Image (cartoon, rainbow, N blue to C red; front, side):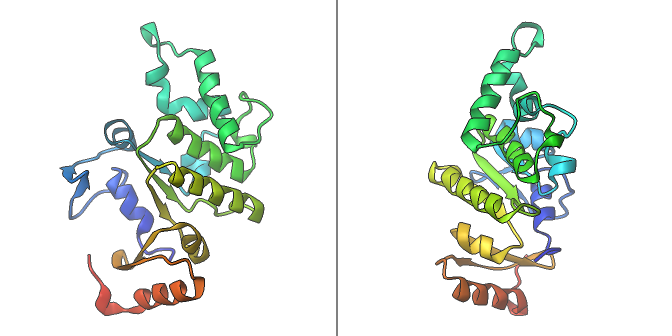
Length: 218
């Protein structure tokens, strides 16, 4: 449910919020992540935020810059200059791959629809070849057709072997996409269930976990 602490948990793991207890492990080793930049460059973790307009994209910057911002260091040549041609090649490849509707790579991200802005936010992490992708509320505020397209995109990424941690308050979306569902309320994990993609059965199990006070574990 909204307010359960899901986004706060992920932000704490990525160094955006303070951790008050517990530890973060990557491949079994305890780590201390202090920023999304460190999460990306040291551990290959990308984060598609739910707040795309304020945190996901630079609205007043062109699409090419939004997509390649995570790989400027890789594209940089002598004296730190980034090749504009290489930037365009990387951006165009992802625009084509994700089906982002643009008038050109120089178009500002703020001129795009909400669904296409969300795809741009996703594209910058794919450009960086992330090893784990966290996607927070991917389809809030988009129309039904765009929502279906985004679901298919997430499926394709998972089929290609990219691990995805999906945060969603849309139970139908969870049942459609997730292999395993972890339920949180009041900033604590209530339990988890394997998803058999039967909506009626899964929704009943999730609701029972939400209200089962004896199932709480920190």
